[in-house]
Amino acid sequence: MRPSRARRHSALGVVGAAAACVVAAALGAVARAAPQYERTAPYDAAVSHMRKAIEPVGSGQHHALLISLRSLRDPQLRGLFESLTSSSDFTSRVDGILGLAELSPDSGVDPVLLSRFSSREDRSAAIRSAIGLKLLSAPAALELLKIEDLTGLDRAALAGELFRLGTPIDPSMLKDALNDPSDEVAGLGAMLMLQAGDRGAWARYVDRLMARDESVRNAVVGELGKAALAYQLKAAVPALLALVSRDGFRTPTRMVINGAALSLDREAGIAAWREIISSDRSQPTLVRAGLQMLAHEGTVPEPVIVMLRNDDELVEDIISAIIACSGTDADAAAASLDRLVRSGNRQAVEWAMRRASTLPPAAASRTLMSVFRAGTGPDATPALRAMALDAAGRLAKADPSAAVTLLRENAGSSGVQELLLLGMVSAVSEHPLNAQAPALVEQSAAAASVVQGASSRRAESLALLLLARTAQGQLDAQTLRALGTVAAGGGDLDPTLQVQAAWLFVRHSGRGEQALAQLRPQ
Image 1 (spheres, rainbow, N blue to C red):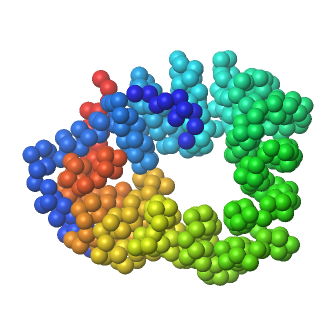
Image 2: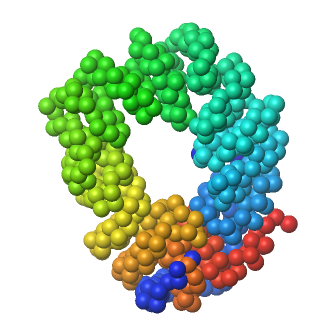
Image 3: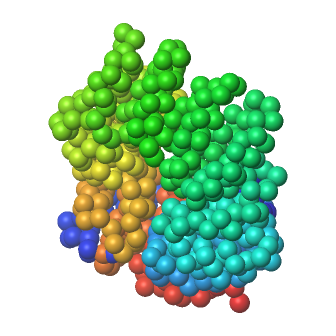
């Protein structure tokens, strides 16, 4: 079943001998625990599960499975993605096109494949998916702009992406966008014209927008602020700031524009920031304004700090973090972010975690470990629990040994260990299968040694999946058998991770090409 329009329009070092022994011991229990799977050959079961990724179903599960296979970024899957580019199913076809592009990040999406959609709506959704994932090169965007029946949104989005990639904007690209019935599309076109040096289109657009009711104006301008940031439209900043200074624009809308301004034109952003907190001294506004300033690197002027103060403990902690993070003492910065984490405020914890990712690994891991502990502790709020997986992934990326430390620390809690291992799986997804970060390769084996025989079946299966993804050579026979059990469904993994285990099993078995031949449409 094709996604709804709303949804479509909203982006192997060989395992060392010691590690191999650990894995064999750790995962033998997995193989023994699932005798019901022995009746089906693991290879056949693995291929059967992979087939679910290429056979469209009404639930759309095949799309999730293909995204999971794409995340492996395995060159051996190129043939599978090539076969999907001619699929009659929209999502499968797009997954094939994007999967190929992700295997060729320098050249990106093939514009010819995008131009072959017979449906204008399908082509538009595919183009914007490629733009959202930053898989479109400037030459490809220029080629797509030659298509005569592009929508106004397509033209505006392609022009914006060209500008982001360093190509000057040609106003002739934007005629359809400026006349588009959508206020968001017309507004993006007018901002692009501003970037090209034409202010007349923006003036006409503002007249149009101000005729809308207040709620519509606020919603549209909020989207324009996000678009200006996404496409790096610095010339739009003064115009947007002037627009939201008018009556009828709410503080949250002004804050969105101010956030874009702080990133694109820091001086103008700070000036607008000061105006906002001068006129609105409410606690939510001061907290959000402080976190906005924390998010942007660089020294913050002392007068700005003074304006933010209101003697509230949370605001003072944010101020301390701003000051510390703008300095050169990474330990002091980490300590200040830890105080924000201990506040328990959802926004403060989220921005502390993001800011920590800009610190050196040792300092970043301190804060990320604090977020994870806060999100998995007995007093964790639902919001903090939701951040724990994000923190685990960021931690595994910044300092994988710290993730293993937390695995040991939580030896009695299989649920917490599973969350950490999921974070490590997320971290390895940022690297191609054949180019994993050495630290993650090493710590994958260490993670297996921690959970072997001492955690849940799912935790052990996740550790095995990590090893299979980071292995640079052959897996030993017993480990491969255990992986086959997981691939067949005996590891308590959800279908999106099971399909990775299925492919990795046939790949490590030396039967990858055979499996792909069975899966390709005849």
